[in-house]
Length: 261
Image (cartoon, rainbow, N blue to C red; front, side, top):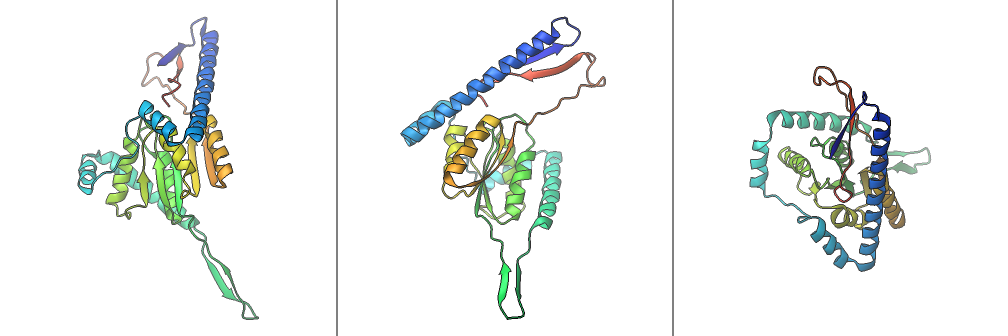
């Protein structure tokens, strides 16, 4: 639901405060729901996991054949593809220059000294929530991991998975080896949590709410995994005279369903 507030109305301040208070309560409720789901899965294992997958979603993994991938790429808007290709090349080049070189040498005593950097192997990237169709967060997290020599398993938001699947198709078309960039889809309890807990995933990169990030940090700490969190970001909205005759509308805030992140 989108709520529009007019700054000229007398009750503007109270309406805004009321709206923010409701949103805060929704977020708190959502966090408690997620925590209870995780506790249930920890206690009852796959039985609980399948229960929540059946309740919240239908597919946890999407696998496309090469012909289907090529078909989807052809149907992709040319401007969007050009934009993604440009972003990929720029991000790849930047992070390639960041790579640390291995060092090996002999000292005066003929001792061999040096150090060698090795890829971590598998990196899990969890990008839940939001309805943005352009996969900027995915590009900024997945490409550095690939440049460093890792494979990537990415879980996008369940409400906007297709932009990431399209991105995977573009990577495939560009010649990225099979198995380097992988996508799983589904809800947090049925897809995100198993990704975080999987023993072959050595690093977890998460972008999303502070509440979910806290849970992921706790899980990674228990398992001794490295993790990176980008939490609680806000998207600004600018209203200009060119696009809106009613310039007094200064903001709109969405109050989501607590189980529909």
